[in-house]
Length: 302
Image (cartoon, rainbow, N blue to C red; front, top):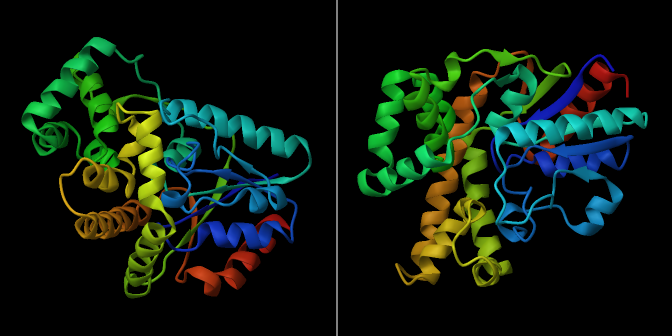
């Protein structure tokens, strides 16, 4: 294959729907680039494809980890490259699908060759994060590397790792050389108008609460009471606050809606700068299907 296809875009733009629909017509297997779908038990809040849907269209890196496990970008890239090679080996087409921009960037542009994590430095940074707050540490990183600050966003785990590297070496992660990617990629980024997307994000959040998101989070907390990284995902951390009695259910929903819209804005900013061979499709949902089908057929001869 000349290049591996990637379907990216902001949350709620219809990536999963399009991949499932086309996967029922073509010999595709999905390699998920979603940082939350990788965890077992995080189903409602991620709009994860059902077991029946995954039986029809094979998915990789969905339900791959327990919520108590950590997924680093290096680990994800290794697993994703392995899945891509496996699918290609069967004569089928791997389609990378997701909105976790840092995963896609690392997969397609190569991983920075960073030193191994230092648990002692990271533990001190977590204590500092609790004492000083996210914004103070994010400013420190931004002063050294605006690129890394944009990359980590408001993700505490990525912020701690970036600052650990910076403080230990004097260099931010973006200054380290990259390992060349194993495959080449062509990317299609869904780019719907925000006026179309944001009302759908509100509707989706309300639907997730109605489907039992609170009960899902309550069950996860019973199994993992120390609040693993997985439960910092949007929707989950807002429900955790409600279950801890920090605010009411209506406030939890409002916080969820605000958080998912903010995340979508960051994704627009991130994917606007996407390097490599990129096509932007100014639609989302079912309306994007003909353009996606044509793009995949023209580019990859399907």
